[in-house]
Length: 145
Length: 188
Image 1 (cartoon, chains in turn purple, blue):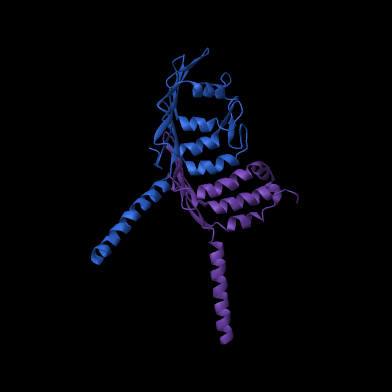
Image 2 (cartoon, one colour):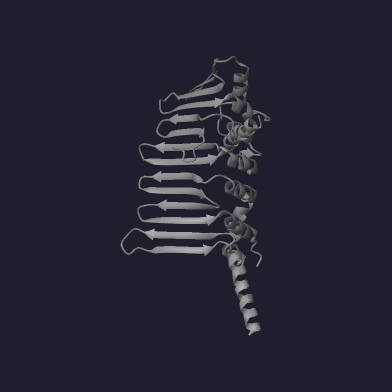
């Protein structure tokens, strides 16, 4: 009985620790709502820490081109992410073109992109640290295997 | 006497804390560089709001194209003008005196007025007007520690932190452009 109790506490502890680790970098939120009748509605919330981990399982040959393109910009990205993170919340970029609008906002530790056009509204929220980790994973891919 | 001292203490603390708090609030006020581009014909609008403290950190990290180590080479974009030479000429000129540059398509006037550098560019075709107003300390920062045809963007941004709310650039024509500095993060 005591053994079962210890096992239960251990499993609960492991679940809590892994849950905390997975959610430590925040969550990626993607919401897509097509405007036409019976259009697609997607609402996806993913722990951001899973993305760089998942990228490790992507065969490098699929990332090699992106990796080459990203590598020269890594010093800028590594400087920009903490700089954006440390800046106050607010709208960074706003583009309006007739009925289409795009807005990029810094909110907390995330970058939020909202698109509203004639066909759909799209909301994407990405934690900056997770984005940086993911970009590092992509840039590190050398396509050798 | 002791009663007076006891009553005075909170007032003294308040009076001491108030200026300190004011300094802290003033120091923490974030300054923004705003860019607005609009086209009345196509109803296109682009607005960019950059906290200066953010730009100050990112600019030195960019070593791409004409921008290297916080400095930009201007020769590629302004073919017929030596920007550095114009700024040096204005620096040594008395207040209000204009440097005038004439070429086939533009009429450019540069002046020093009320501690600011003022540039008016008039397109001879009448399509576009450009007004640039830059506080003199920002101009000096832009040409500090540079060689010919270089502008020190990093130093210029640092200098922008200390100026008041100012419109730096206004372009009117087919597209209207405004670049300004203030403390509002909405950029309206």
